[in-house]
Amino acid sequence: MSDVSETAERSPETFGTAPDQRRNGSSVLSRAATMFLKQREASVLAIAVILFIYFATTTTAFVSHGSIVNIAQFMAPYVVIGIGLVLLMVCGEIDLSVGFVWMLSPYVMHFFVDSGIPTFLAIVITILLLAVVIGGINGVVTTVFGVPSLITTLGSGYIIFGYALTISSAQQINLPPESLGLGRWFGGAPWSEIIWATVLVVIFQIILTRTRWGLYTVSVGGNLLGARESGIRVNRIKIGNFMMCAGLGALAGILEAFKNNIIDPSAGQLAVVLYALAGVVIGGTAMLGGSGTMIGLWLGVLVLAILQDGFNLRGISSNKFQIILGAAILLAMIANTYLTRLRSAGRLQSKA
Amino acid sequence: MSTPETGDVAMTTPKADDILRVEHISKRYGAVTALVDVNLRLGRGEVLGLIGDNGAGKSTLIKIICGFQPPTSGRILLNGEEVHLTSVTQARSLGIDVVYQDLALIPQLTVYQNMFLNREQVRWPLLRNRSMRKAAKEQIDAIGITTLKSVDLEVASLSGGQRQAIAVARSVYSDAKVLLLDEPLAAMGVKEGAAILDLVRGLKDRGISIIMIAHNYGQVLEVCDRVNLLQGGKITFDKYRQDTSLEELTEMVVSEYRKALEDRHRSASGTITGS
Ligand SMILES: Nc1ncnc2c1ncn2[C@@H]1O[C@H](COP(=O)(O)OP(=O)(O)OP(=O)(O)O)[C@@H](O)[C@H]1O
Ligand SMILES: [Mg+2]
Image (cartoon, rainbow over all chains, first blue to last red; front, side):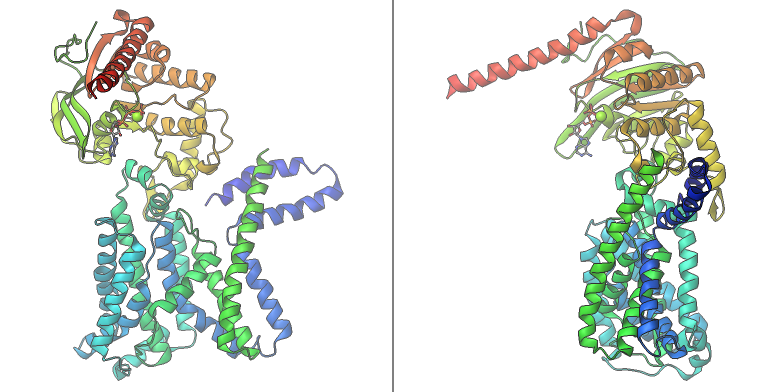
C-alpha cells in the first residue's frame, strides 16, 4: 500500500550513499533488491519462479501447451474462492462453507435453467441468491450472535452439504444442453476459467487497496474496536465480505461444472477450501487479519499448481503428493516469515 | 469544600449560550454502574478539564457525548436543543469530534490513511490517496509534529507519542465545534506535551469548545478555564480556574483517598471484631 511513496522517499538517501562509481553499481542492484523485497508478494513470486525453472529443466513436457493449460485450469477455481477467503481473513474471519456453495451452485443454476430462465440470467441469479442467503446467514450469525466464523461456517457448510445431497440425490447430472454455448465463456473453453480468475484478482486487488471498502476491511481486521470507534459500521463490512465470498464460491462451482462438462455431487466441499487456504497463506495473507493480497493469492495457488503438475508429470502418485503438498506449505510459510523479517529489517535500516 | 454524597454541590451557573449540556446521564454495563447522574456543562469557547480516578467513568462519559454508545438514561443538549446521538459519524456531522483514550488507530494502515479514516476523500470508486497524503502532510507540519519522517509509514512502526499526536491531529482538522480529548497527553514527553497544550490553546482561540481529560492537574490548570471532578459516577466538583488551585485539587483527591483507606480499615477491623 505504501510502497510507491516509501520508495520515493528513500531514493535521495540512496543516491547520497553512492559517491563513487563502483559503489554506485552495487547500490542500484541493492536498491532493486530492496524494492523487490519490499513487495509482500516477492517471496512467493520467487518461490514460483524457482519451482518453474526446476521443473522446466528436469521434467520433460513440463513446458508444453498441455501442461500449461493444465496448470491454468487447475489453479483457476482455487483463485476464485481464494479471493473471498482473503477478503474474510483480512477482516478477521473465515468461511469453511464456501466449498459447499461451490458444490450446490451448479444444481441451483440447473434448476433455474429448467424453469425456463436463460442461462446467463440463471447464472447471475444463482450467484446473487447464494451470496445473499448463505453469505448473509454466515455474516449475521457471526456478527450479531457472536459465533466465531469457523464454527458458523462449519455448521452452515454441513447444512448446505446435506441440502445439496438431498436435492441432487447424490447423483451426477448433465448440464442443460441449451447452456453449453454460453458455458464456453464460463469455464467451458480451456482458458476461460483462468481469465475469470485473473480478472477477478485484479479487480479485487484494486478494491482491497484503493477503495473505501478495502480500507474498511483492513481496519476491521486490524483493530476492530478502533474501527468501530472511528464510526465504521463493522458488521456491515463483515457481512458484505461473507456475501462476496459465498458469491465467488457459487461462481467457482459453475465454472467447474462447465469445465468438467458435468454437475457432480463430489465437487467442491471442504477439501477445496483447505486447498485454497493453503494458497492464501502461501501468498502472504496474515492469519490474524489486517493485511492480505490478491496478487499473492494468485501466486500462492500457482505454486500449488506447479507442484501438482510437475510431480504428476514425474509420475509421483497422488497419494505421495499429499506429503509433498504438506511439506510445500510448511516450507513456503517458513520462507515467507523469514523474508518478511528481512524486509522489515531492511526498512528499519533505511530509516536510521 | 464539596462532599461527594451531596446532590447540591456548588456548581458554576449555567449560561444561556452554553454549547453543550449533559443532563442526568447514567450508564450501566450489566452489573457495573459507571455513571449515576452526571450533569455537566460546557461553555462556548471554553476549555473544561475533566479529572477523576481510574475507573471513575470519564471515558464512559466521553463515549456517550461522541455518539459511540447511548446512555442508559439522561439527555444531551447541543446549542440548547436536545440531540439524539445514534453514531459517531452522526455526532461528527453535528460538530462533535473525539480523540479516544485508546486512540482508535489501525496499526496496519499508514499515517495518512488513519488521519482520513471514515472521512476519506473519494472520487468514486477510488480513494484520492495523493490528495489525502498531501493534506495529511500539511496538517502534521502545521501542528508541529516534527519527529514523524513520513505520512506513508505504517502506524504499527510509530512510537506511542507519535501515535497520540496523529490521533490528535486528525480530530483537530475536522472542523469540529466541540472537541473531546480523552487523555491526549498520556504518552507525551515534556516537549510534545507542551506542544499539545499549545495546540489546545490555539483551538480555543479559534472558538472551539473543548473537554479535556488529564491526570496531571498542573497541565489541567495550565490550559483549562474550568475544572470538573467525576467521582462515584457524578460530577462532585465544578469550579473556574481562578477559584481553585493545584493545592485544592490535590488535597481534594488525596483526602478522598485517605477517607477510602480509613473506611476500608474500619470495616476490616469491624469484620474481625464481629467474627
Ligand atoms: N465496555 C464496558 N463494559 C463493561 N464495563 C465497562 C465498559 N467500559 C467501562 N466499563 C466500566 O466502567 C467504569 C468506568 O470506566 P471508564 O473507562 O469510563 O473509566 P475512566 O474514568 O476513563 O478511567 P481511566 O482514568 O482509567 O481511563 C469502570 O469500572 C469500567 O470497568
Ligand atoms: Mg479513561
